[in-house]
Image (tube, rainbow, N blue to C red; front, side):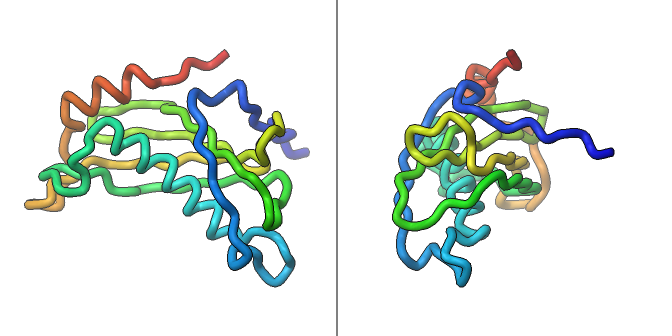
Length: 147
């Protein structure tokens, strides 16, 4: 028998951003298309990286998406007010794993949640490198501890 899936809640995220749904986000089934959730997740992570390194994407070392995972709990339809919750889950030598929850505004349970793994890469060599110290300090200070 499969293990029951735990539903993510707001309490497990450290910061939130508002997202706007658009009519074109709806698919043929009249709910927001799965690809849009991935865009919301990528935007939440990118906005956090830009807070740590405002010069992105012009820097010599850049974060490159290496893994994306998303779980769906219930659909969202346009029009809706949506919020993305963000947290840093793990910081490695060359990578970071960030979690994102997608919430209908005011709801406690996430409609969807997932994570993205980014690897820092040298633009010049296209090889993985250590996360720059300034960025690492910001990531490590934002790691959300499990409760």
